[in-house]
Image 1: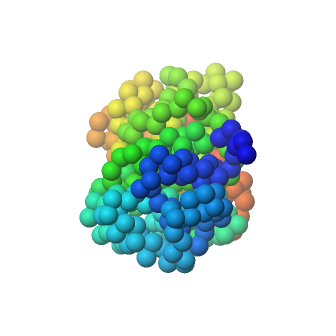
Image 2: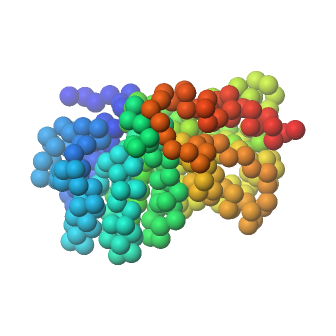
Length: 315
């Protein structure tokens, strides 16, 4: 069966299909699940094609991380997937000791980040995973925005040693990049050149940042748009270069404004080039059962609010 182009697939199915590619090229790659393999897109994709590389530990996320660490010490490359809230908050101590402290080659995939978990409500809506994972030593943290970037990040994760965490959106998303895309850790992607304000986004919110920047251009406001798939290592050089040009920065993320992308931006600029910054995202709040549109409006980080923030920094 011929697969659809990547950007025509749901991102979770991209994950399953790319894992199959990785297993074909790197037989040491393993797929670990905690009873959410259909949500992750690995069942039936990986299970049917490579059943010997597929391990479902059941509803036991901490055991999954411990098992992955053990497998990694034997030369395997385990990819562990579950909802973001379970992949980070629930197993933070296991990741700290068995993955980061021991510096094992474990890859962690958090699915359904932020407001994309709307139907599951506040318990499953994780707004702090980028923040808590980026402060972990020996941990790299990524938030790709489309199918092509997901594929390239997954290849990077499989081919480079160390603990890594990646947010994985689950639905189909418009293409931002194409088949030629090559992920570079520690670098931002400049999606628009501009001179009035720097707009910094990551993951899901990059799609909204693109729309906001295009609409602002029609008003004569020149936005320099930086997409940051690499939260750690962070693209400090790219950010500072842009801030020196615009002297105004807006950040937007599908996360808490505390400690994640906005935190990394403020830390970097405060040390190297103090600049006015407006952070958009979830304030100091838990989630709730709601649509994305409702949450964007309530917490002020949709397209309209991105445009307002950019305008405000110009006054």
